[in-house]
Image (cartoon, rainbow, N blue to C red; front, top):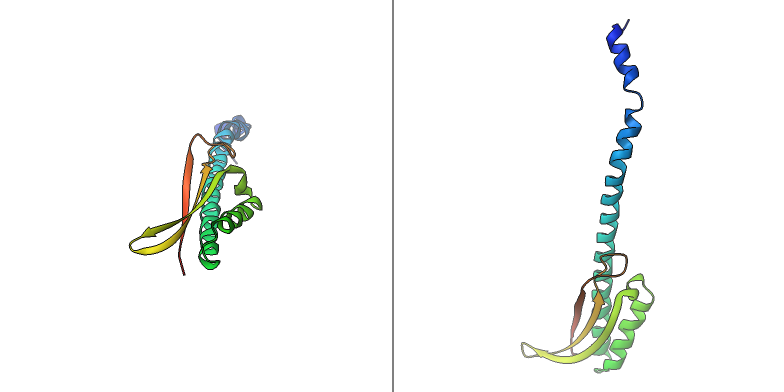
Length: 130
């Protein structure tokens, strides 16, 4: 049925799929790990920002108690995977645009290799004083 040379070509190409997979698999794994690492960095940034905002809200609701703002932020981050990257937390009362506000600043490492990064970032959460 098949021409003789086509049958030989089909037989001679056996094993090419495994060789191609061996060449492509490391590249696919590298791309997958890069995507996972990027997702971790975005997750850490989002969680730290949310914790800073929550800490600022606590300060605004409890008559400007900056210690409670810091402890609330710290407690949120301790119960999360993002807490491993936190370096410092500080709360302060600021005035911006004529409005009195509370700010919580969290300094954390930007996780680029696992949870370790070559650079740090400062994320700030604000809340209006009530």
